[in-house]
Length: 362
Image 1 (cartoon, rainbow, N blue to C red):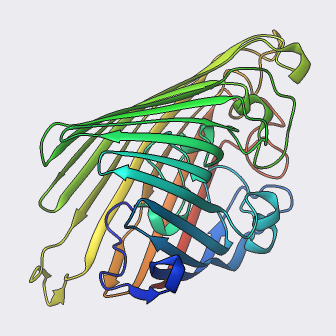
Image 2 (cartoon, rainbow, N blue to C red):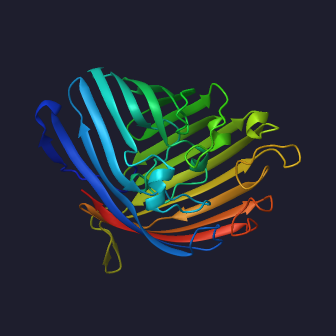
Image 3 (cartoon, rainbow, N blue to C red):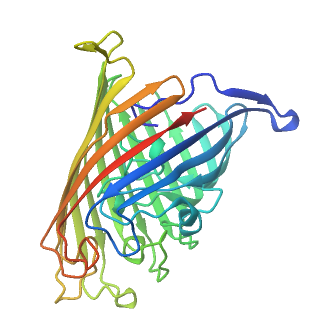
């Protein structure tokens, strides 16, 4: 999980006999949303259960495992909101993540199953992140892979490599890599990347056909000291020319973002208002694409050659296992193609949202 939300520091420990000692935790959250520039089939106002999930985690011994089960939605900027009842079928099913882990030493492990992606700094589910909604750059990344992953870590270096199915395609042709250099306690530098080693024509909500055929790279810096967490990163993706998926010309995206959070220290005040438990996360990002409609380049944003930027602010309060946060976001689009942009007719060039999320991390 990213700052500022924190998991339950005293999770329930169960003795499951031959299955070992298991930590049992979970999350239940509700969400309310208002937006303009509504996509077809979406709503201006809506309320939903954004998470109702349970986690079982065995963290000791040579054989370990993790199971995540339940309901979820995956709110993201600049795309329609898919309600929880539909998101489960559209994305990763009622068991979105779960894997077996073999850890013969403290520095080496092998994972197999439904794995969280190695790519990018933002995680899949709302409670894991600084902001309620994932960002524009996250929309280019995959979220859950089925496959095998190998991990090695030393005092300052951590390396993970995975053979997987990319954007949940069930076609095992992706290679993903993550390398992390912990410079010191406050500074971390990471490089993540992945690519499909062969062409794929599969296209679903969880498997966008162009992104599933791309290469993607992120360079991420993290500063974490005192009340501040600051995380700038840059991203590049490339989709080659593949006539069989409708990409008659190659295209790329290039983007940059900065995520930041300030957590108020115990005893802080604003006049008479106590600020204990309050945090102020935010995100600013820009993304551009190459290609034109005329040369047959794939649409990777709001039409070939389009660009977009976003700003998100998420005032957050947490007390023990309870939290509540409000989010204000704005997306602006440029050089769009009519019919591929925002709004009911695909011609709008901006979208504002206000989101409220509250719940428990037990």
